[in-house]
Length: 131
Image (cartoon, rainbow, N blue to C red; front, side, top):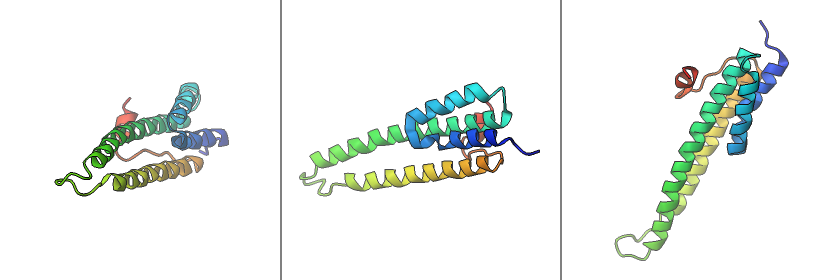
């Protein structure tokens, strides 16, 4: 049975909320709370999107704290004889690539939702379904 186009649009938008960071996660939460009883398709996609976005935001918050500390420590110790190299700049590029990969994965999920296909994220999908 074909899904209504409104359900597909709301489901796709839920996955694209990752582009707006915490504001997007709040938007997805609103979609989930208002649509979970009306459409199981939208509810399932919104729940997956919310779980993924919260996981990504927490992960990147922790990584930012770690890498910013490494960057500042590297700047302070740059002239010390034991730490001749400042490695802080290379980690910023790594974080950017990881975030780009996370966004691309959410875009793939969004395309699946726009197509009317059920989608589950690889690592957290089973856990989120159980909630």
